Image (tube, rainbow, N blue to C red; front, side, top):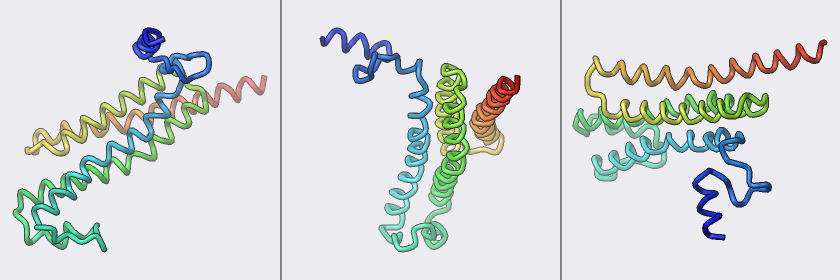
Length: 179
């Protein structure tokens, strides 16, 4: 039994699923990528919050937390504030992109876009968002900031691509109904 479970784990088969369907041959990864995408917004926020609390000697307030950066800006060193603003921007950007990605994965699953392609797009989006976040937090020159912008447009293009595929898939289905 243990050898079977290990073999199943290696090929991406869930031992809990009926019929032992390979995980990546279903849209499960595309659907699971939705909460993973949302979770990618947390590290920059946690970074911002913990560093703001440490730098301000715990003067940040939980009563109006979104005002803390503005309220404490004059009391903290500029390089510290710049990093905190970057972390906040990175966090908010992840949240702003999340609805489009979630809609694309749900629509792609509903319209039965090719499972392999949908899962690939989900993984590609997560990789692009991770790269974007790393670049957002680490880029320090105007010249290299355009790499971050490229990663941003790459990540945004993926849900647009999926939604475009969904539109064509739905149109094909409607055409078949009219015949």
